[in-house]
Every structure is written in structure tokens, then in C-alpha cells.
Image 1 (spheres, rainbow, N blue to C red):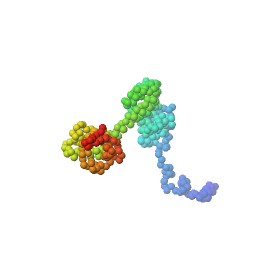
Image 2 (spheres, one colour):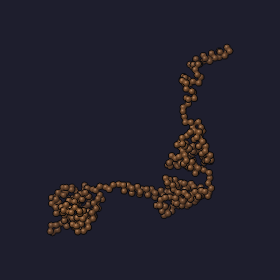
Image 3 (spheres, rainbow, N blue to C red):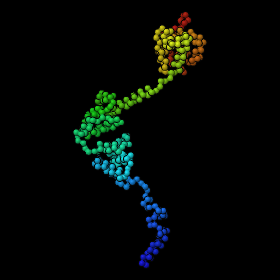
Image 4 (cartoon, rainbow, N blue to C red):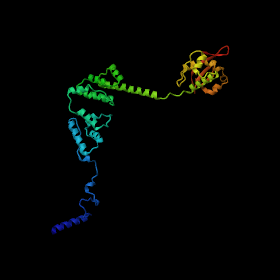
Length: 340
């Protein structure tokens, strides 16, 4: 007993010399008391799935059905949220399998059901040759599937079924939805599936560009008339008013009656020069030059550079001259006539 007391006393002395309290809880950390909190609670609250070992990364030599069952058991005991099943499953793939199921540049955000479909479709139980051929001949481009993805599916199923390159091209052509692309393949007759895929991609991109250009063209509002077109229309209205045109007559009807032949008028942002010539043919000689406003320069002052008379040439322009429209010569009786 005395020996035991001496040993205990020596332990207490050693503890005092180390600065420790011999009466303290031996489970407490050096920093002091845990204040009533159980020691196991000092472990950080982490995701419980970390306590369970996930299945090993899937590789081609493994049984895909058995591996999926193991994976679903792991989801259950680890309480992985269903929304994360696809992400975790993709993470538990070997590099080679991940590259095959998720090629670079393709969307990776898929559901777990789609993941299982891809995995079993590629590494599932082997189909017989007859089953593969039957599935091959039913392949069609699905909605939302790109040309590249469809071509890859044709290649994978067809080569497993032992289909020739010519058969791959024929099946690929039969499953596309674009008539233009199908006709292009019939005309150019690509010899390989890669050539057929490039041809169809090119045609379908051209189709998309065409439809987009048509849509943008029809959706754009009609441009406003230019300053020149507005000035010509204003001049026509002014001359028509001077001749007391009936309110029921349009400027074209008035000019047709005045000139004695049909007048083609097209005054828009494009400025059809032939239409303007037809409109002004014989019209300025009869109407414009007989007005006092033209003689004293009031029209030029009113309409700016839209109407300029110089060197017996009439021009229509805005900031710069748009082009010579017609020449006017003076006859012996003093009246002007058009020199065609």
C-alpha cells in the first residue's frame, strides 16, 4: 500500500511539474473543460455518406447491372439527395468510361435515369447480333439530339452489329429529318459516315441561317422614306394643288391624266429611278416650269438641295447628287421639252 501511495504521489508531482491538473477530466483536451458537451460532438458535422465506402469506379470489365445495384445501395445508406444521384454516379466512373459516355463538348447535366440508360446501353448485357441489327435499323435522329450525337449512335450500334461503312451511311441518311440534307446526300453520295456527317451538318447550318435571315427580314419594320422621296412627294402634291386636282384623284391618277400615259410611281427608301423618270416625264415641262415659284427660285429655297437646275440639267439629291435623271432643252418657241 505504501509503495502504491508513493507511486501515486510521484505521478502527481510529475503532473504538477508539467503544469497539468491531476483532478481534471482525463478525456478533456489541454485547453480546459468541454462545459458539459460530450466528447464525440467535437467531431465536425459532416455528410454522413463519408462513413460509407462507395463502390469502386466503374470500368468496362465490371458487371454494369451489379455495379448499379451497389451504387443504389450506397445512395440509400448514405442518404444522397436524389437530385445529386447523377452527379455522384458520373464521379464514380473510370476515366475511359467517363470519356466514352460524356464526350467533350456535350451536356453533362443529366438525371440518374439517363445515366443508367447510357451505362447499360454501352456496357450492359451483350445483345445478340440479331437484336443489334434490329435496333440498328430502327435508329432515327431524336428531337434534341445533334447530328454529331446521332452519327455517334449509328456508328456504335452499327459496328457492334457488324454493319459495313456503306450500311452506316445508308442508315444515317434514312434517320435524318431534313429533306435538303437527304437530297444533298443522294447527290454527293458520301462514302464514309464521317463525310456524311460533315455534309449534313453543313446543309443544316445553312438552313438555320436562311430561316434566321428570313425571320429577321420579316420582323424588321419598313424603313422610313428618305429625304429625297419625301421632297418629291411634297412637290407632286404642290403641283397637283395648283392644278386644282380633285380630292378623289391620287397623284398618280392626276399625272396619268396630265401626261396622257400610265405613270409608274414608286417613291420609297429604295428610290426607283425609272419610276421617278416616268413620274416626271413631261410633267415638269407642263407644270413645274410654268409656276412662278420655280422661276424665282422659291422651290429650291423651300426644298433645299433636293432640286437643282443648272446647265439645263435637273438633278435630285440629298447631301450629294444621287444621279442625273434627265436633260431639258429649250425649243424655238421658248417652251421646254425633254431631250431623251
